[in-house]
Image 1 (cartoon, helix red, strand yellow):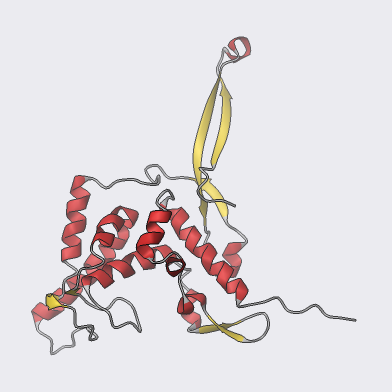
Image 2 (tube, helix red, strand yellow; image 1 turned 60 degrees about the vertical axis):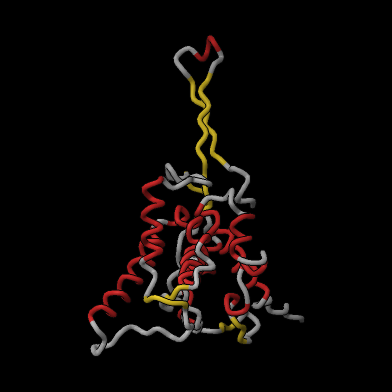
Length: 236
């Protein structure tokens, strides 16, 4: 099933004079593929087409006011002056200064607000991928903590958007073959397959925000299926 073919639901409605003039009204409703939630296995069988919410079309450009807000939020990702050391930046304890506490909370709040802006913030986030100023850590098990890293992980978390309970099972899961297999995101990403997140976004720029999430989910399902081969058939 293609996600970028402009799938729509089409309805034809008659006017009072249609039986004489043979003129009818054609109504087209753009649709997106939706993931209904739950576990990966449960949700994969229940993907469904839904009418696209108004204003959510692909390529929607932010307003000048929104761009100003996004730039200000990216500035709020700066934790302190200077280039990122890539040494872990932990949440300040009770001995930390009020200013340090405030800067840390400002970084967290900015990251959350940028996520809420969804794909409207993507162009400016990508623009800052090479921003080496010091931020805080937003990804476990990764030392990199520049503003550019924060911008990258902001988009990454939005697009890979797995069900809430997906990460509860840690590094690996047990496949249908009874063996433990590393979870796909520990060994790669759909962005890595496309030579990086920036390139992936360029290649998928015609997709809506939900369609980009579904495309990443499809990658996850395909990789999960590879690591959980079907059990061999019983022989009599």
